[in-house]
Length: 169
Image (tube, rainbow, N blue to C red):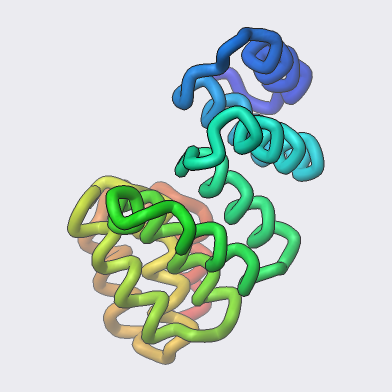
């Protein structure tokens, strides 16, 4: 896998932006590339432009929620996720995003509930698994955090999970 080349990410995002009309998958990929490259202003502008073309776009609302979360605007992030509509509100990715917001707010019980719902929909969602471990650690349930890491070969390979394991050993 090729990593660390943000110029390539940016050129891909720029190419995707130049296409009219931008389909939802290309929009999400390009906007996520901006977020991954910490180009939050570009991701926000792109989502706002997309929302002007399609005011009901759940994808644009999700990106705006993700950007708000990255800026630490947790209440605004939740408002964007709430605006996505019932069809999308229970998707594993949206549940995970909501869990990240609740974690950032220190609301560990709510975060764990959302993570559980997210993993029910997509048991392989690695970021949700990692957040679950971190949230269990924060809540003081160290045995549960340790058990999750130790039973998952995938988590054992993740540096964040190994750091948690090292802290709780």
